Length: 151
Image (cartoon, rainbow, N blue to C red; front, top):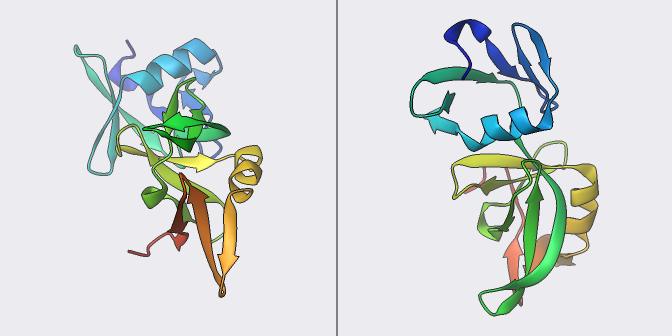
């Protein structure tokens, strides 16, 4: 596990760096994502033996694609995340940022994930407009699209 003097940083584009340079090995990044914890606004790598703070300048998780398949008896959208995992979208957590990109909660609500451009285009295929408002339609329900900071 990394020592405390590694100064681990996740850049805005999701790339990982430490004091030795960029962490490019996908298995190392995925391992770090798997042991990531959050305490308030602070992020840590915690393998049970030591805890190393991670400075996060953007997002750690990205939605790379969407899959359509059943979830709890209805057709649903599943998120394919950059750590190789998949999970059902919670449409109540979906938010639009000021640049019109999307984010949502992942990992049981512990983290935010930003949609990549390809996932964005897959998502908007499920968006409808009604009376000037936009809704995500999934599982036969229409969920209002909200801006980040809205309730």
